[in-house]
Amino acid sequence: MSIADLKSRLPDVPGIETLTLALSAGHQRLTWADGSMSANVGAFASDQDIEDAIRNAHRLPSVALIPETSQGATMSVTGAGFAGGNLKTQLAAIRQKMQDGQAKMAASLAKMDQAATAHNQLADTVSAEADALLADIGQFTNGGE
Image 1 (spheres, helix red, strand yellow):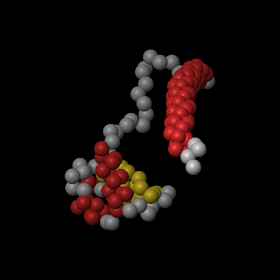
Image 2 (cartoon, helix red, strand yellow):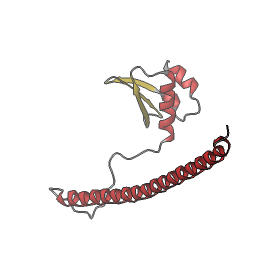
Image 3 (tube, one colour):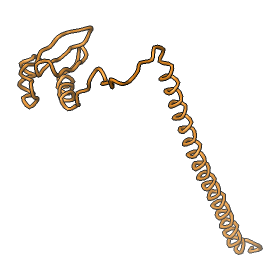
């Protein structure tokens, strides 16, 4: 699909009239809205893939590449404080995940126990009904020559 075709297919996308295409490292880079919007697709992307990439990029909010930092914050040379705090947060998340998993497993095992009990009760009921049927049939087959 040509750039002109894309422009005609996507008139509802703001800034599409400035759409450009560049090839870079095996990808197609589409840029529009005077360079403020862009999308990357594979070198062999279909027309629909290209259209979807443009529409999806238009829907997504823009994100700053450099996060804002406060002026009063001091900077650590080693980053050790961040690493320790980050590790503590990750370990707490893993512990919580383990506790959640144990609670789910306990509930699942209780449900399995109930199912096994119900299965055994059903087997007892079927066995009792089979005994009753055999007794009924026995009335007609015992000594009846």
